[in-house]
Each structure stands twice: as structure tokens, then as C-alpha cells.
Length: 77
Image (spheres, rainbow, N blue to C red):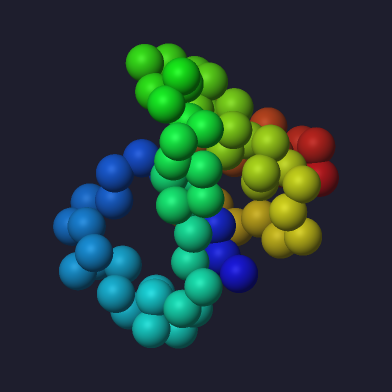
């Protein structure tokens, strides 16, 4: 399983298709808990916290940027 912790993907589904071909079990927080996330939608920092918790608990973490969340997770690991 692959959890994508990000906002809107640049290029959308077309950009993600090669990754989906390799890893068909790709999920986002919206796919896993759409209804449960409704109270958090107005608060981007709370949505980021959900991603942080899932990534922190994961077996493997791979980042595509050098942002603060990636640095904090790398420090915890």
C-alpha cells in the first residue's frame, strides 16, 4: 500500500498514472476518511497533522521535497 500525503497533485490523475500502474494500492487521506475529514477541511494545519501521523506510523517514508514536514519526520526516524 502507498499513502500519498500531499495536497492537489500537479497534473492530477494523468501525472499519477505511471505511479498507479506500478502501485495500484495508492491511497490519500480523502480516499480513506472523506467523511471524517469534513471538520478539518477549513484548517490546513490540521490536515497536515493527519498526514504527519500517518507518515510517522508508516513502515517506510519517502519524500519528494525538502520541506519542514519531511525534515521533522526524518529527525523522528
